[in-house]
Amino acid sequence: MQTPKDRIALVTGANKGIGFEIARQLGQEGHHILVGARDRGRGQTAVAELGSKGFAARFVQIDLTKLDTIAGAAADIEAHEGRLDILINNAGSTSSGDGSPGAASLEAVRNTFDTNFFGTLAVTQAMLPLLKRSASGRIVNLSSGLDSLTQTGDPSSEFAEFRFIGYGASKAALNMLTVQLAAELKDSGIKVNSADPGYTATDLNGRRGRQTIPEGAAAAVRLALMPDEGPTGGFFNASGPQPW
Image 1 (cartoon, rainbow, N blue to C red):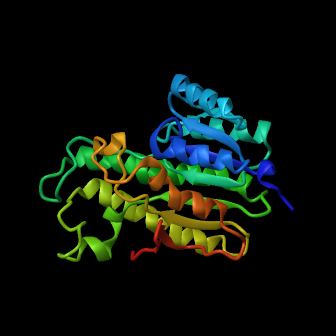
Image 2 (image 1 turned 90 degrees about the vertical axis):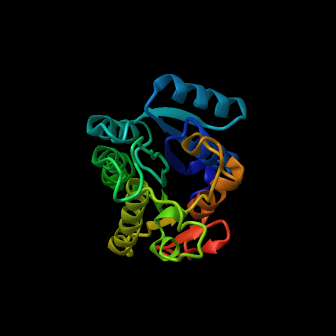
């Protein structure tokens, strides 16, 4: 049986914000952390901070918009660790020019999809062979309440007034990845779920969120650490299951 210290977790976008906090909390549980980030300097700084707390961590360079870095990251992990137990697809972006369907810049929408959906799909495909070597693999996709069709379609919901078609649609597509991949991998022991961090104060929203970063990391960490009898193919926040 694997112990936490045997388990290897890759967190994309782990150099700051919710991604770094997820990495910190998993490190606190004894996991070996792979800090995925585009910028080598920021990634190494994050590794140094985790190391100063006594956590095992190393930097893996990965840019979700550059397929060669994704392939390089998979080869790097293959060479150094030989497998992956946890993949946290945290890296995401918004684009200037995103907005309501009638006004959003098509380029902004495409750019958002390139990172939030296509980039995440590419990372997941590249890491699957490594995850299949795990005794109990976990994939957690960082989603958003803004992608819930049920909630954004409800005029009384707090999400109804937010209209960013690129961001919301890209995260809704990410939820479809969760559902389909969970079904594809149902006999593999790998569990796939979406986590809604909630409205968290991060750089992505100009730190306007009402939750702290540790609160925003809670759902993803719980899904990463859940036991083998836990759910797969679901959408959860810190309070529990959420509507698609």
